[in-house]
Every structure is written in C-alpha cells, then in structure tokens.
Image (cartoon, rainbow, N blue to C red):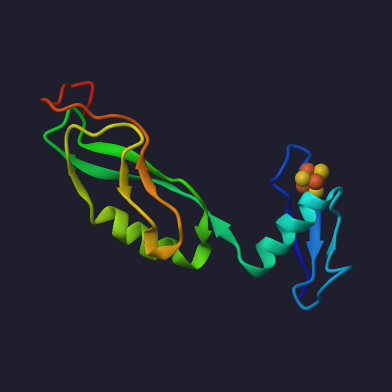
Length: 127
Ligand code: SF4
C-alpha cells in the first residue's frame, strides 16, 4: 500500500509517495533531492522520533524540569523510554544540559535537562 507523507528535512516540504513493498529506484516519488529519498527510506524502514517531557524535582524552585532527548530513537521504543525517564526523581539543583539518563535502552540517545532548577522554595510564579 502506498504511503504519502511530507518531507520534514527542509522548509520546502515536498509531498513524498513511497511504496514499502518496493526496493531501490522507484520506491519513493516526489522528492526534489537525495535528502528526501533518505528521509523517506528511514521513515519506511526505521522511523525515529525525539520527544520532550518533564521530570519531577524535589526541593527546587520549580517542581518539574523540562527534558529532551539528544538523538531520535526508534518510534517503537518511545513508550519504554518515557517510562524510564518518568521514573526519575531529581533533587535540586539541576543544571541545564545535565544528563539524566545516558544511552537510553542502548540506543545512543541521552535524556538531558533543558533548563536549570535552583534549590529553594517554590514561589507563586513557579507553581
Ligand atoms: S525532498 Fe529535498 S527539497 Fe524536498 S523537502 Fe525534502 S529535503 Fe527539502
């Protein structure tokens, strides 16, 4: 069955049509450049995504810190990765860029804090 999706590699946003049953030339149509062919092939064979979430922080000026992955991981592994990250509880202070979980599920991606959370009492603004 043909799949249609938009290439996200550049702002041009070519609409790609791909046939997962085929291989080689003709598998992907609509790409204006080789990057789009690579993108479509990756989407068909090994779709990967990154995500952002948050982790609980104790004794900090904020109860949560935003977290993101450093590299996309296979879509099928996202649920398990999220469960691992959500099991983390940090104690302030937390530094922006601090690695909270390295080599998640052996996939070479890290979960890092997006911003710092200082130790301290929560203010009305942080709630
Ligand atoms: S196929 Fe090439 S030109 Fe088209 S959106 Fe993708 S990267 Fe951009």
